[in-house]
Image (tube, rainbow, N blue to C red; front, side):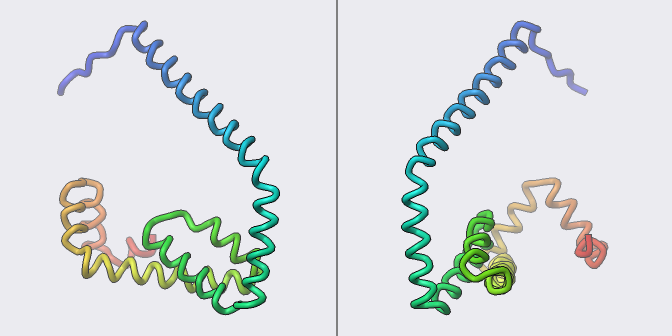
Length: 151
């Protein structure tokens, strides 16, 4: 096999220092952003809370359907859905929020599956051909579909 040349110890130290400075810089930026956001968040959250409660009271089914559709869209686009899940749980309580989130996730998964099997089929096949891991998963699913699905 090929041997990979290791950089000299001075170079390794410099690379570690660069990584450390990058992490520290990112942490400082995040803290600064959190401080700025915190100063604006209180009044903004109060306004958003009042508006959400007003909409929920005026259009309860419309807000639930909108939340359900947002969850569905987020699932299809692979966006983490925790914020909308928490929001729906806050607005509708555990039962109502769970119902909206569950239906939205099921519809999002169904839509993702249908897109993968129809409109995006060629793209998915090209993606599998480019990555060994996806090829291995494809072979495993072909050999033992129920076992892999259960895992």
